[in-house]
Amino acid sequence: MMNPSAVVVQHLLKQYGSIAAVNDINFEVAAGTCFGSLGPNGAGKTTLIRILSGLIKPTSGQAWVNGIDISKHPDAVRRHIGVVSQAMTTDLDLSGRENLDIYARYFSVGKKERTDRIKILLERIGLTNRADDLVATYSGGMRRRLEIARGLIHRPRILFLDEPTIGLDPQSRRVVWELLEEFRRDEQLTIFLTTHYMDEADRLCDQIAIVDQGKVVVLDTPEGLKKSIPSNKIVEVVIEDQTKKDDTWSLETLISRLSDDPFVERVSHQTTDVLSEQIGLQIDVNNGVSAIPILMKTLQGWGFKIQAIGLKQASLEDVFIHYTGRSIRKEEGQKVNFFIGAGVPRKMG
Image: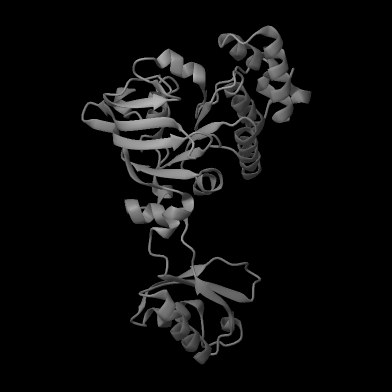
């Protein structure tokens, strides 16, 4: 039996003048799953979370969160959800424990339940020993973990996370990922995540909506998205670095001669260790399956020993480029107004 829908969105539109920050989108999120909204800054991801959490009203369309109409009962919606915003909002002048306590009081959590819940959450996020220190003394990763705990203090059914690991170092990001996976499993939590990190979406999400210019361009599982695009056109090959043994060869000469073949569209050098005795190449071709034996014969005929060769597996970055026509990393960062949030046209802020 399929899980009931935790979030249902039908023809949702948010208009700012002539700009549609959220543009007639439709999707459902099954209870107990992790749903990812993946897109560049300014795509409308934050605006969507602000609508679903009852902070702003849509221009038109409908949405239900945990079965509650967001337009008719926004206060009821907020009692069923937790929100971790893109900006860090824990109070620097209070301790970690005090931040959690104030938030629990806001949601009318009783004293005994509040004390027990705070203790459990501090243990889960690894901050028991720092619970009574000022948050001003916390690292970025510690503070982000505290914000996640704060969002869960009242036992919500759905947790909204807006760019939860932005600005964190790789190690802190992985700690946050593991924490979210544990909470989702142990508390039967539905997670709604916005991100522009491909690896984050791939790691955490059961379903991903690629969002661009306010629209859902495509929606599927991570594997479904990867399988939806042609993946037999890129050959990755690693060869012995003959250029160090034969002065007639250079990397530029090799790339130029490979590029002369009519079935080759582009050749690029994959970065390798300076001391490496190998050369890594990515070769865009008309048909990878047919090209591999030809490339092998050509390279071997030139005296290059092949260490590895195969078709490149499609990534979410490839999927994004396929459906939007550009790389997500080409987007410039957007300034965030603390009171309004990202995704709102700057002239409105």
